[in-house]
Length: 349
Image (cartoon, rainbow, N blue to C red; front, side, top):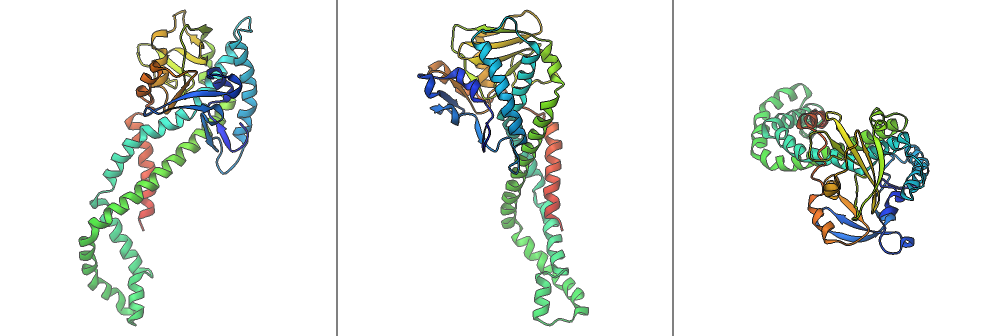
């Protein structure tokens, strides 16, 4: 993983879902929106500088070392070369994949996007913008702005400038009223772009910070250690979603790509090859084979991969992203209000 291209779905895991000649390392991608393509795993689940900000490599280096350890564990499980499953090892791997993937970052962003637009429209109305623009114009006029430039050109004495400005202020405001609507849309567009980029930056920094802390300690790992793990063979081909691991909860039919601690964890699923998955459960319940691929697709944010071209897999593409909502409206409102307040302060004098 070292370098500028960071795999958030490690290649050692993707190798369980290769198609055709395994030496060529191709898999088949099913993308949200219906696109399907054959792709080399070097180009799947990868993003430039995903684990770094400003080029630092600390997290990337840590994850590269972890990959070597995790790859050995997963390969032994694939080949059924074990006497018993180490619950601590699997708890660590489950916890690692939960926070590592791009799914978490994408889910946060996509769940915020619609709410962001609504919030932006609420803040960017004429009653909010007009006083800001008026104050900005007044500030510029009284502190070396274009009005001062005009007064300088006309050689207006300094002692008369304030009174003169008060005389011409109504004309400025009248002109502002005439043009405010034409100014509103460009300002909205600029504001949306600024807050959108700010939101992405905040999410990335928060995600990386969380992953760094997570390397050393994760409270959820204790819950994962208490699960009973099995490696289960299937008589049908599995898909691997970009969430990697999925979670089932007591009393909830739909799975999620993250452990929602507000609910009671029932089981976890981690596909490791086209016909094998790791299953951890609190009791001796059987996995839900009949809906497993469906839930993997729903918990994926952008795509899933498979070892073959299949009409069954094609039918799952329309489900991608359905179970990726990460935040409640109240949580999003709090975060977005903080970001919006920062952006609004930059518009104010």
